[in-house]
Length: 223
Image (cartoon, rainbow, N blue to C red; front, side):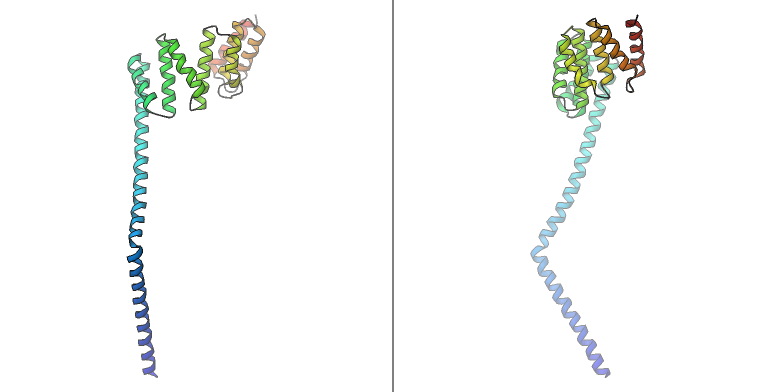
């Protein structure tokens, strides 16, 4: 009985050893056939991961450099060093993309206006109002264009057509209403001007300074 049991254990052990050998042999054959692809796959995953991190870090660094350059240009502009700031803004507008490029173009137009280069400023503003990549930048450019045309006594229909799409926009409507009010004042339409100033007075988005101007104009026009 014991001999049979010992023989059984030996047979089971031998069987397990054979099975393991077969498995190892099969694995070796599999590895010889497919191992190189596993190595390539792992290397590819690591490369993609490293590349992604490198690209991500590069993008962060580039964004920071653009942000720093814009801050420097803005500081120079505030100091009255317009030519120096203009050079940086132009570089950002030409070499960068996204929001900083469009904002830089707005700043270039503002500097041109300060330098009495109104035609050059309006070329930029009109292009931004039409083709700007960001809706808010397009809207700001449209407001600037309407203000410029108002100052240059452009036809009333032309100005109102520019402003109409912005009247319903929560963010831009107070400024659009104020420009419309100024247009009606220019056209000697007191009733419509008052109506526009009253809209500003009751607007939830109009800044206090604008509401104060509207209140003053309501007092003047109501006399």
